[in-house]
Length: 354
Image (cartoon, rainbow, N blue to C red; front, side):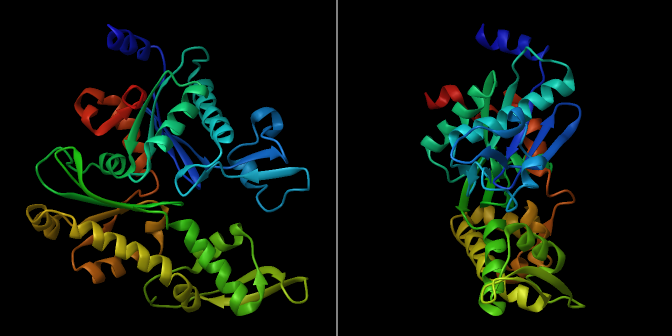
């Protein structure tokens, strides 16, 4: 009866799929695809958890404040390494996106069902934190989807078949590697090294090499503009501005893609090692499938120039980047809500963790 009532409510509400990322949050709605993609940032009054602008200083608005706020304002990320680090602000973040969808769809009173992606390596306590935040933010029922499974569903891999599908998801806070067969994860590796660590590696390089302190937005800009992990046909240069650590004044320097590639070597080596460890745990029957099926890369980190080439070279099996790697997980959460009966064994719900 409870499921019948839940299904009935769903006819009059909007089910929401959320890719709750360390750096960015994407929201998928049935029939419309991904309708929201904003930074996972909340701006608060310093020393409190009071969100500015009547609770609307979230996402794009808050991201613009990162590193630029006056003394009384703090722009923060409620998630670190793929998990919630501040419960109150995570709730504010999720509420902001849920309310934005409900206003978009015109349903202001009926609570939605929500599917949220989570890293494969998080604890039961961390899962419970996600569910509690979503419940307080206005979700009627919550389903948790392991990120590699959501990504595989989102890009259309045949995860229900008795054959291996392998996904490498390089996000902002975590890198997820998984071999999936018959709807479940056969082997997986989750590390808290991903896009953020790449940004930090670039910032550290600038500090060590040029005595130049740069902010996280500048680090990310360098990574996206000239970052690579494989030699380029034509190397690139870029002007980078920051604060001189010796003279304590603004300064600009010219950096090239070769030195940034060297700076990115350590985090990339950790990602490659995670892939190798996942492959080592994969049964031989499924390993044989991967020779033909290869690995599909998703997530923002997959867009680093040459990432597919260097991984393929190291593991000697085919690697490709999905056509739309940034939305794969969000799309997967949306598809999950449309096929709850078929994909039930691939999910966890709030009731499972009580």
